[in-house]
Length: 233
Image (tube, rainbow, N blue to C red):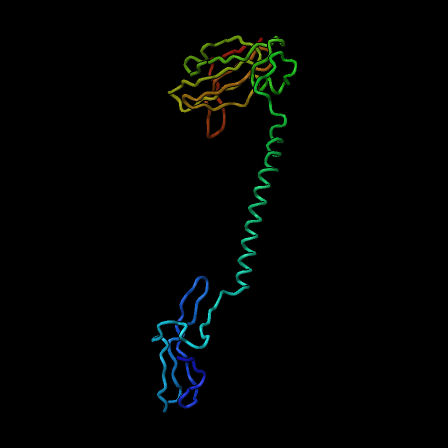
């Protein structure tokens, strides 16, 4: 059976009926039949009756392959993606170790020199453990109970410089009381029941503290008679 460009019967125009079949990334147009467009002519041939596609005498298979431009765009995009990944790997392998090295600059060694010769004051303050060579004692923390009926318990205490006092409010009959430093070591502290406040004494001397009723509407303080004293050597 031969593929016809003109009707072999009346020499009129013919029309080819095709079907599309996908192959890989493209598709193939396969002719299945031809017929004459002349209404008075009944010429018709059916290619689907051919058992072997090679029996069709003309090369009428039309394979359509995806556009080369699209393939190039895909290749360029893929190449760009691979390039970005490569740059990221190079950054991680070269730049990150340098950043880590910069972070480690000035970092304290795990083992400090206990002689005190190479330890800066900032390091001593952070660790709060002065060297034995300086002769300064370590800071200690002391607790004092406060309430309106008893005032300060204990009422007086002697400590060393750098020691810490913690006042514990045990007044459960009043909503809040104020802890006041008569020597203005700190601003007045409003404490509710079970609240705590601590202060580190960094200079020697004698310091007096009182409790007061706080008027939250007028922002005034009415002091209670009992006071407490801290002596710092």
